[in-house]
Picture 1 (cartoon, rainbow, N blue to C red):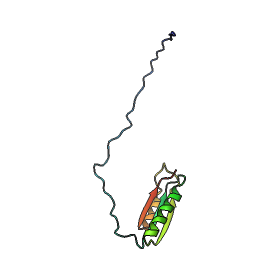
Picture 2 (picture 1 turned 45 degrees about the vertical axis):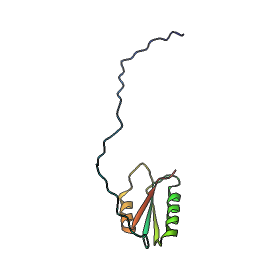
Picture 3 (picture 1 turned 90 degrees about the horizontal axis):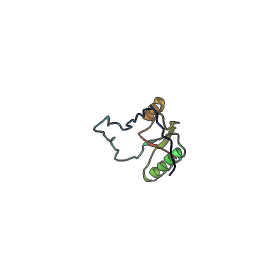
Picture 4 (picture 1 turned 90 degrees about the vertical axis):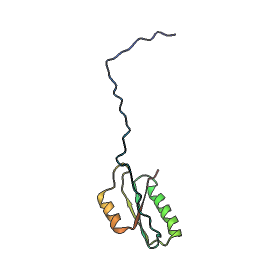
Length: 104
C-alpha cells in the first residue's frame, strides 16, 4: 500500500437542492374540438434539428384523416427561449389549433 500525503483545505462546498415545488396544484387541459374539419393548424417548431420535419409529418397524417383547411408554420428559433410574443399573437390570430414539437 502506498503512503498518501494528507491534504486538507479550508474550502467549504455548498450543496444546492435543484428541486422546486409545484407552482400550481391543479392544471387544466384545453378543450378538444369534436372535429378538425376546416381547421387551420399552426405548426410551431422550437428551432431544433428535425422539429419542422416532425411537425410536417404530423400535419400530413392529420390531413389524411381530417379535412384540414391549411397549415401555418412558424419556428421560434431557439429551444431554450420562450416563444416571441409576435409569433404567439400571429398563431392566435391565424390558427384554430396549434401543435408544437421538439426536434433532435
